[in-house]
Length: 63
Image (cartoon, rainbow, N blue to C red; front, side, top):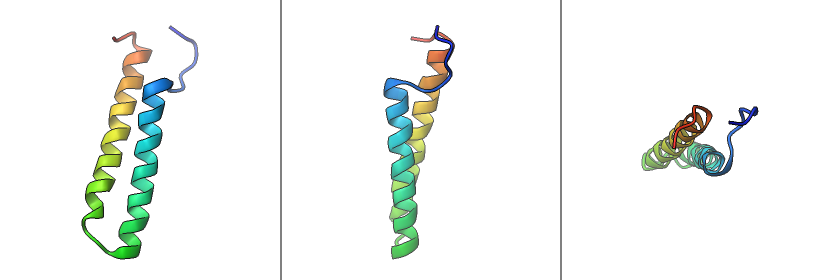
């Protein structure tokens, strides 16, 4: 187990992609007023959630 608490590898990738997708879709939803962008926002949040869960498992020694 490492002493750092910052996300690494796949967890970091998922968190970053989820953040970028959420921000981009939020701006697009505000600009275009299209309700369909809500699905992209939800997907971005889901990616972040999965990334943070993976990061938590890595910290606690999970597989």
